[in-house]
Length: 168
Image (cartoon, rainbow, N blue to C red; front, side, top):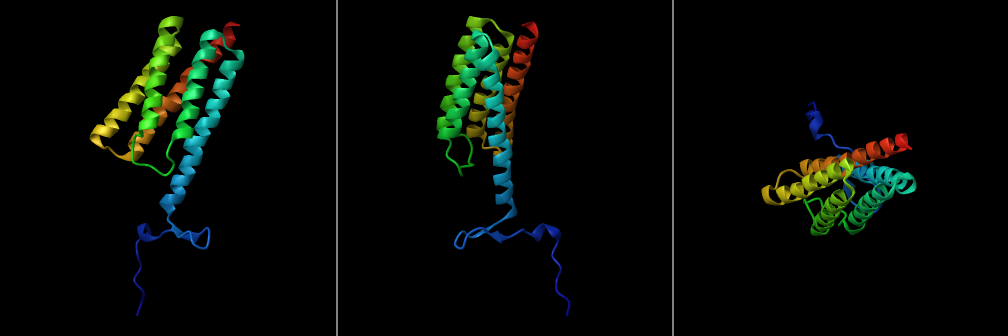
């Protein structure tokens, strides 16, 4: 009698990392790899871009880079690792405070990049509330907040700091 062949979707990579740790599935490994690339890669990029702004920028660039760096670091420190259930109160409060401070800095400095950064932060805060109200998929929430409040904000800062360097 021939064994029943299962479709490829039933195949899972299984391994043990420690004697009593249990079996990890491929999605757990994928989540750990995405955390490594998405979260820590973004934080490394944040350190580079904000460090550049703190080192070479004028007063408004330094303040903006400092606000983003402090907010990003606090979000990582106060994040409840392993909780992938949507927005956390700690991160929402940090993003609201960062939004208010960036809006104030935008009014004070009259720089277009800080206005765009504040708008991206407003979108991020709106995404927090939308995720809490509508309960849409976690990966959608993570992608939207990561692209708007993370990589979009860093791109905005990198362009602003590059233009500042070209004017020097």
